[in-house]
Structures are given as structure tokens and as C-alpha cells.
Length: 355
Image (tube, rainbow, N blue to C red):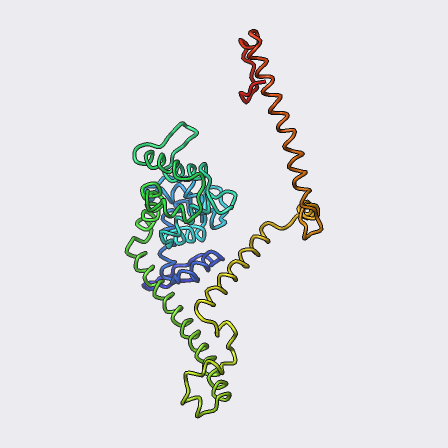
């Protein structure tokens, strides 16, 4: 893997999986990889093939923190505080090519520890502390605008999904600003902001060209299917009727279903019925019927062979002890009020209820 520049040779490391990913995903040229390699060699003063993460972020005047380490965690890069060239390359390129929504998704993914699809209030607090490099163990707290924003966020909701987090980012942009500033500093420190902007634009143009090719192929396929369908309709109608009575072509369409013959109101009704059945199926899959529930239905549901009186008896059996307990509590309270010695003593349980 060699680059020849101005008559000299620059030998680059053997491209491993990470370097190949960067070439494939970001269309990096050998010249661009050699530029990153030069930067890496300047940071690797000991010429060991490894550089410290502290050195990487010191170059951009940034303190290494949990957010910077989570970038490596996202990319499944194992390290002991030092990384090689391929790890350096994929870390810088991945974070710098992130769009703003992707940075927000990255932070959401990292701090959603249970991977349940939402952040608890404690997770959100840890996220904001990490972004602003606040060490709660040392007694450091939010201050200034961040404190005001956090006080408002606390009242918003106890937990939130990604869409809610995105909404809060629009309301309180300063809360997550350091994560976006980190990307800007990396772009300035490595290759320069202009290079990244031009590279992003070039990458977007290539993606648009690829999407255009896919769309053209899809349209060609659809036109081919439509042509075959029209040939079948023409055979069913006859050539004269096909061209003279074109408004009846849909009636001779072999792919036509009963749904296509309905009016708009009937279609809307069918769509509502379908959505209802789909929702019922989803709920059934999420909440399957258990054995105890089936046994209960066999006892209480008439269509399942049960007796509706079973439920009345069950309610009556639970209501009676409840009434007796309430009555006994009232009697005990009345006795304490009558007895002056018991009235002076305040005997309570842990929960504060009278006994």
C-alpha cells in the first residue's frame, strides 16, 4: 500500500478492516489516507505505531472524557489508552462525518444503558454531566444556563425516547452544545473544516447519484410490469375496444381486486377495520394469554364454559373482609379516643398509620 508523491514514496500501513471501511463508506483516496498518516506520524513521536488518546484530544485543545471514550466504544475499539492508525482513522472520520441528528442518536445510544429505547431521568442527568465534563463524585453541580435548563428538563418528563430528546435539543440547544463543538474542533484540528465540508458535499453527490441510478432501475422495472399488464388488458378487451373505450380498461385488469371496486368511503371503512385488526394482533402478541387467564375464563366467561356468577361471588368474598377490616380499625380508633391513657400515646407504624 504505497503512495508516490513528487518522486518519493510513502509507505502506509497494511489496510485492515477499519481502513477498508473508511475507504468504502467515505470514498477516501490513497492521497487522503496518506494525509491522515502524516498527521498520525507527527503525533507518534516515539514511532511505536500507537498514540495516546490524551494526545489526540490535546491537539484540538479538548479534555478526554466519557463522550470521547464512548466514540471508541461505539466502534467496538478495544484500547488501554492508546490507539493505532486504523483506530485513529475510523474514530476521526466517523464522528466528523456525523450529521447533527446522528450525534444526538449517538449520545442517546450510549446513555441508554438498558437499550430499552428511552432514557430515565438519571440517564439524562449522566448524559448532561458527561457532555459538560461535570464530576458529580467531586461535588460538582450544574451552573448558569445549564442549571436553569436542567431545572426545566426535570419538570418535563421522567423518561423520554429519542424523538422527545430531539424536541428538547431544539428547546435547550446549549445543553448538548459541547458534543457538537467536539465535532467542530476535530474537523478544525484534523484536515481543516473546508476539507470536511468539501468531502461531505462530494460524498452526498455520490450518494445522490447512486440513489438516482436505483430510482431509474426501479422505474424501468415498474414500466416493464405496466407494459405487460396493458398487453393482457388489450387481449381481454380487444384492440378496438381497448383504444375506443379506455375508461373501461380498469375493469379488465387481471390484477384488479374487490377492494379496487369500492368507493372512497368503503375503502376508508375497510382501512379502519384492517387497522383495528392489526392493532388487536399486535396487542395479542405483546400480551399473550397465560394459563391462569385461560383458567379464569373457563370459570367466569360463559362463552368459554364458565359462570358469570363466579365473578360476583369473588367480588363478594373480597368485599366482606375489607369491610370487616375497616370496621375493626374504626372500633380500635374509638377505643383509643375513649381511653385517656391511649389518647396521650401516639403509637404509629413505620408508614405512619395508627395501630
